[in-house]
Length: 431
Image (tube, rainbow, N blue to C red; front, side, top):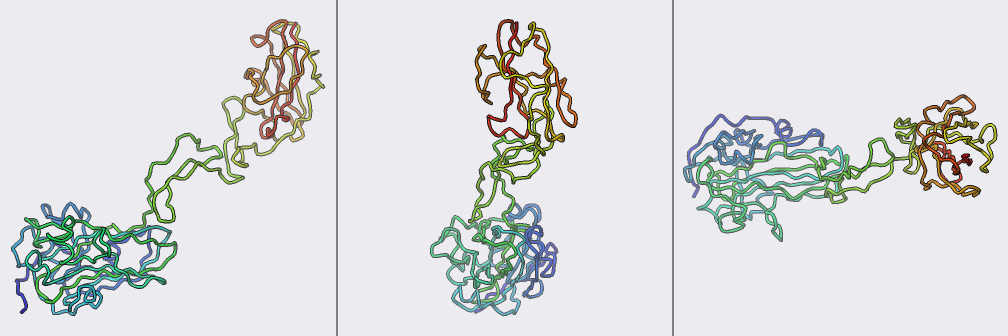
């Protein structure tokens, strides 16, 4: 015998088309909606904004798409009278739901959407299944909700399953209630018409590839009778690709204008957020090359190292300066002019930390090394002048050298410093 119940009416549910409801659910930055179809009796679907004090208000702060086996308008009622939420729409059932619940169904309501993913990612819906069948008709009238996903290689697969069930169980009156999977069930004590409802549940995540076209069908139906209503509320704006990776990954040790890329959050093949390693930028990428003093110039990356945009080879000191320590400063305050010729006049700056003054033992001829402990001669750099064919600057000994000692003067050109042999040097003896 069919159960009877009065029709409840409300003005809180907005009637919308299939495409409008699809737009309420899916993120336009993630998907292009190709098509949408709504197969529901008049008044059984719409967009719902919960009123203040509603039992589901916290679950749906931005509202929800509602599909009902009766009138969607009873969704916003703030009080419940047992067995009073129902109306027979006289609509047919759904074969997919019938196959799952194991009996004939009635008053089905479905929203089918075909969309195209704009990038690779993972999606999941969030929803609440509610019913007036609770609690009296558990194991008698098994109303149910399905969310069927399909694509070119995947047949229709229900992804609205009770979390943690194995084998997977669809969400129905019999699979979620006060006695079964009760951790996902809420008995209504006020705040809505429906006598029971699930917690806010996620669907099983679906992995999508970029440009993949896929379809999903959200469908609910009454089982074995067509009076007491069930409804599903699908959270607005909840269907988006997980492409907002927010796992903290940056090390904070990589400068933005260097030739490295700091660790970032990215998705692995299972669309799980992971941190990448610190990587090199592509060869040729722009970078900031440390130039004179604290200044920098535009450079280009090469194997993770920022190089000068054009390299000027070192053709020698002018006039030729002997490598031996016959280069004498009369006093510790004396000056010496230093010049060198340049093959490439477009680039003649010195590498960071050069010119460098390194103490040595008089009469020795140590090979210069980039690891030598020496003094960076910023005041010499201040006098550096570049011409189309040469560089010239003046080194003053005052404050840098001591009488009776010997030093090595090292020069390393920016952009050409790949080996120790790139360092050019001469020695100085102070009287």
